[in-house]
Each structure stands twice: as C-alpha cells, then as structure tokens.
Length: 156
Image 1 (tube, rainbow, N blue to C red):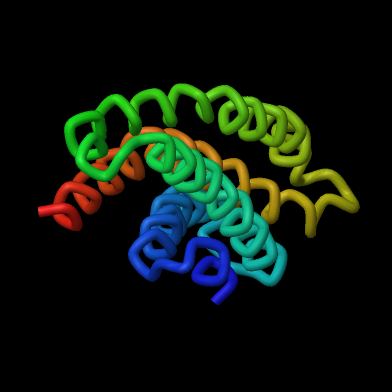
Image 2 (cartoon, helix red, strand yellow; image 1 turned 180 degrees about the vertical axis):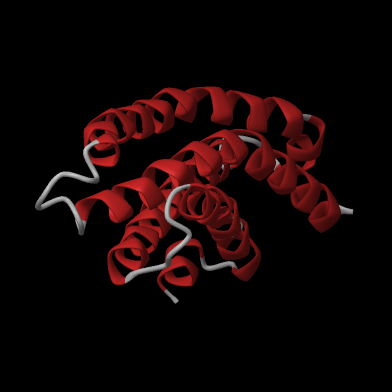
C-alpha cells in the first residue's frame, strides 16, 4: 500500500517488490550453507533485508520515473534504453555504497558467531549479508531490464 501511495501505479510497485525474491535467494542460501536452521533472529534478518532491498528498488524506479518526466511522451520509447541506462548508472553508486557499508559491518558478526553473546546477532547478520549480496547484484541487472520491458509494453 505504501509503494502504491508513492508511485500511484500498481505495476511500478510490483517492479519494486521484485527485489524481495532476489533478496530471499541469498538469505535462504546463507541460512542453508551455515546452520540450516531458520530461527527468530534469522527471520528478523529477513525483515531487515527486505527493507533494504525495497529501498534499492525504490531508488531505481523513482529515478527512472523522474527522468521520464523530462521527455515528451513520443520521445520516451525512443530514448527508453538511454533513460534506464543513465538512471541505473546514477543510482549505482548509492546502492553499492549502502550495500558495501552494511556488508562490511556485518562480516565480524558473521565470523564471530560461536562466541558467547553472538547467538542472536550471527544468524541475523548471516541472512542480511547473504541477501545483500544476491539482491544488490541481481537488482542492478533485473530491475532495469524488467522496467524497460514493461514500459515498452505499456506504450505499445
């Protein structure tokens, strides 16, 4: 509902929500490779991860929409590839910096998981780190492709 309120478009909201399965891939894989147990801390990690992944999608889609407003309707399709490419390049740095900063902060928590007091932090950090890796890498490729395909279909 919040995404729909932001974009006033169900399709754009769905494109942003496309990031959630991309984040889920890395989070589930990280749980599987470490303990294999989905605990309360790991579920909290998934909630945090979904928030970060959604924010990355909002950054991209809102930037595309802002750039489209600068074009006349007839020029949008002709320049769509350029709009998406420039919008992705413009948002790449903030997305990568956020993911890298969070990942670097989480690495000590993941590596120190067997120490006393880290029983809660380690599973949560593992999920967030794994999901950050997958969602950031896939977000950079999948969201622009899906956005461009949907915009082409909308204007046909």
